[in-house]
Length: 98
Image (cartoon, rainbow, N blue to C red; front, side):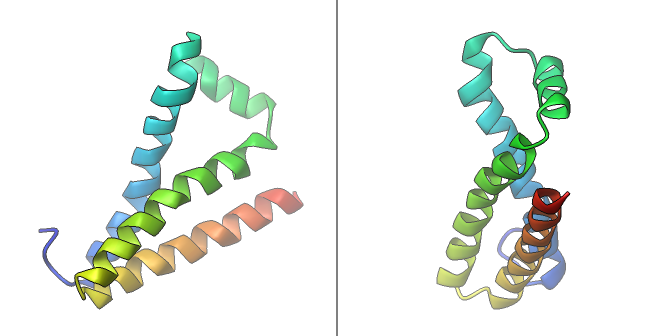
């Protein structure tokens, strides 16, 4: 499935990769501090300026996946990943404004 060159695969990877990176970030940074996932979400709810920063960190994983797919010449998939990354960037800008 991941060897295909489809725009829909890129869109799917663009949405899933930051979510996976978010949980890896939680496991690496906040779990060692004995902060449960529910407490982490409460912390994000109470501290809204952290949300764009964490989303930005999670988008680094999208950059890595985009790089790998452009190196393999899977341009349609890379285009889908880039499209979703731009959508996330717009969301980050809107969150910083609000």
